[in-house]
Length: 271
Image 1 (cartoon, helix red, strand yellow):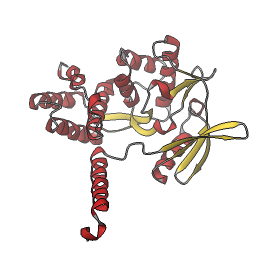
Image 2 (image 1 turned 45 degrees about the vertical axis):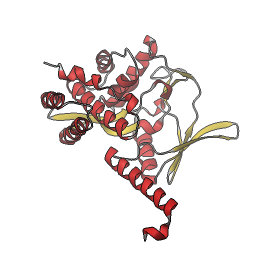
Image 3 (image 1 turned 120 degrees about the horizontal axis):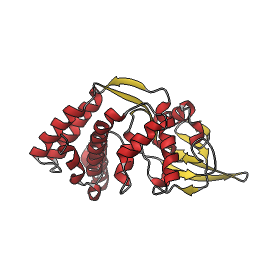
Image 4 (image 1 turned 90 degrees about the vertical axis):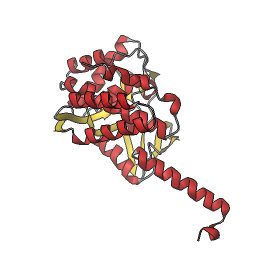
């Protein structure tokens, strides 16, 4: 059968098989979407075409469910595997500006207030242990570091975790300040990053990976002070889970330059 396919086709099939295997190991295909900007009758819209209809459905459902809908672009259309949202113009947030950080804290507080639930941390722990195991096998962590992190994880792990809406890709370019409003005119324009049933604090932990000098712990305090449920007891555990999974994905998607084993040091040094 392979001989009938031909050398070039066989090579292409092998590459696709390896790609599929990598995606399975990573836990999905990533974002896997195409983005277009469309002008219609003098207005601009963002058209997002996903890899399958289920991805589009999840994003549309989140946008239709979240209470803080004014913090996101207006959903215009969901059809099969694509959604359309309004295009939002404005300036990118400045993470060194205290007013913008306050708006960002209010944004996360509003998300975290939106019908959070308590659930067992079993799935998070299982995933964390797998990620740490893989990182040791990939020689990102030594055997001693793996054991130290496993002990830390056991100590940090809460019996139950607060879950709800979170914004899982909070890089600066994904936030636009477009005027007034409940969160200082802030809009989270990467609507694909609005996720349901996330461990609260996941988005903040992701921000800490991207913003040099960002004081995540102080920001967590600020978010709670702005009205979020008190998720501080779980934050360190959520941060370790996020860091482990993120590091694994960077390795398996060929982005090793982002892998920084020293990020784990603070967890090894915890009392």
